[in-house]
Amino acid sequence: MLTMDDIVRDGHPSLRTVAEPVQMPASDESHEILQEMLQYVINSQNPEIAKKYGLRPGIGLAAPQINVSKRMIAVHVHDDRDKLYSYGIFNPKIVSHSVERSYLKSGEGCLSVDEPFPGYVPRYARVTVTGTTLEGKEIRLRLKGLPAIVFQHEIDHLNGIMFYDHINKQNPFAEIENATVIER
Image 1 (cartoon, helix red, strand yellow):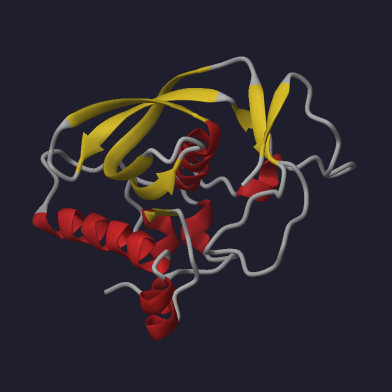
Image 2 (spheres, helix red, strand yellow):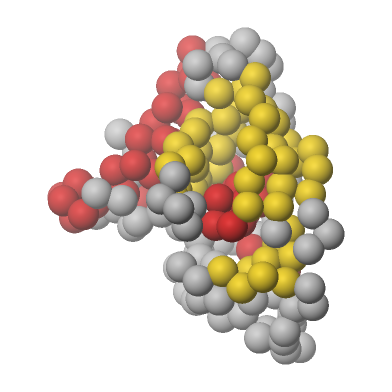
C-alpha cells in the first residue's frame, strides 16, 4: 500500500523528467503500480483510512510522484453534478482542448508540494483525453470543470511540469481572460 512516504517532494528529479510511455499491454509490474496509485487516491479521500495511515487527501496522482518515470496517472474525482471519474490510465494524452480557459478559484495544490503556491493556474476549460485503462480498454474522455483540471495537472506531471509553473509570476491573481472560475 502506498503512503505519503512513497510520494517524492518538490525538487526531486523525477518531477522534472519527461516520463516514458508504458509498453502495451502493460506489464504486471506497471499494472500493479497503477492499481496502487488509484487505491492511494481513493483511500486518501476516506477520512478514517487517511487518518489511520497518515495520508494527505488527493484527487489525482502521477507515477513520477512516486519516483516511477512512466506515463501513468490515477484520478478519483467528482464533477459538479457528482459524477465520479475514477480511472487508472496508461499513456494518457490530451488530444484536443478548448480555446476557453478555466481555473480553480482556490488555486491548485499537489501531493508533492508541501508549501502553498497562491495564484491562479490557467487550464483549458474542456479537454479530450485518450489512454488505456487498468482493464486494458482504450478510452476517450471528454472532460470539463474540475475533472478537466485534474487530468491536465496529472498529465503535466508526466511532462515534468509543475502546477506553479503556470502561475503568473508578476501577478499571481491576475484575471485570466476568457476563463471560467471553478469553485471547489
